[in-house]
Length: 334
Ligand SMILES: [Zn+2]
Ligand SMILES: [Zn+2]
Ligand SMILES: [Zn+2]
Image (cartoon, helix red, strand yellow):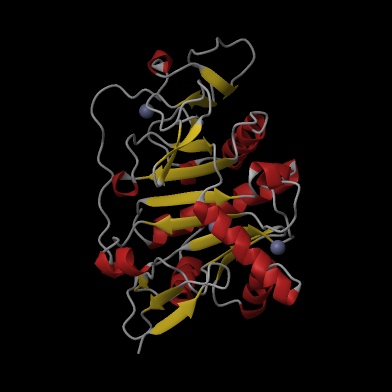
């Protein structure tokens, strides 16, 4: 029989197939199709993007010209725009709000052929540092309430360009999913006086069977109630609500563990498309300590279908215990 497993924070249930679980060979992984035409993220094509907001480049090289290691630019086709007033109003039973926000692209490397998992430790740290610098900078804008860092890799995960990049969208509201996690964490804390994420980290370290990898400050594991096959969470072991408070050493530890997780996932699952996102405390609440920031990584192996849309339950064909075992066994060399 399959198992229903409950998320202790969101309170929702998932169905985990424990009888005839799907292993890596049961999923079809599509090739990452090569785009045609000039890539706006390659050297020499800098004029195809909006100007640099943040850049890592050697002294002496010209802004918005080649020679850089990493660039952050505004998205050319933004979901939200920074210019203009924030206006909210009602329309009968509906509420609406002007599309004010920020939408930035972090171009992780000038090399078109390399994925995030191929970056050197220094390059990887530069990406995470850019995540931090950009999200801290946007906190200065009083209109913005939440900054979400995320990555879409591969066509089926929603990437429109194959050149390695991540994105940052800052919103004028705190998204519902984050509010649900905050409320769930608060509810758990009221009963037990402890953070549910800290409790989960402690349990995973104790039991070990769902751990993918760990180092002194971070842990990567497949959560007990995983919604998706081979879903992995990466968390700081010590309680911390705010991604923006990470020290340079913390960034180093986080970078190494996330890179290891991506390398293991690529090897175990034949280079799947994936999404990851970073959940951190909302901008106005970043000094409050009720939350525990984390990264959620989901390879794109299944599709949402009627049952998922209709119930909010997910059917996960791969138990997290099996997924973690497969990822632990995948080859990884420093
Ligand atoms: Zn390119
Ligand atoms: Zn915690
Ligand atoms: Zn989350």
